[in-house]
Amino acid sequence: MSLTVCWLVGRDSQRSRLHMLRTNTLFKYVSYHPLEHQVVTTGTDRKIGFWETFDGSLIRELDGSLTDSVNAIDVSEDGVYVVSGGSDHIIKVRMPARLPTCLLRILTRSTLQIAL
Image (cartoon, rainbow, N blue to C red; front, top):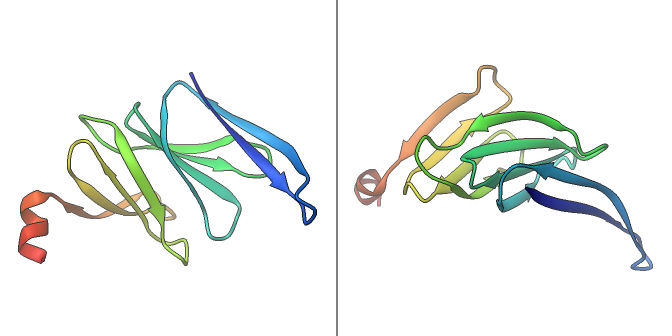
């Protein structure tokens, strides 16, 4: 069981706990959506989780990898794209707002060498 605590930090550095995100994984990375309405998490369960910042509820989960943990995630500045990478050595670019989620690009070691 993994736990992430979201804090509200005021101007005078006073902190108050907003809520906790709980799931059956070891969180590897947490990214804050630029519009501040979601937190995106990855972990050892190979899932990408989208959490509501208002109440800490899980909005949805995506399969981040079929074989190994997802170690890092980032959201583009406009919030349209989500990029993830993990122990399977694959980088995936997604558009999570499109349902079903649109997987735009999968980059592996060999395709990265070609692209660079």
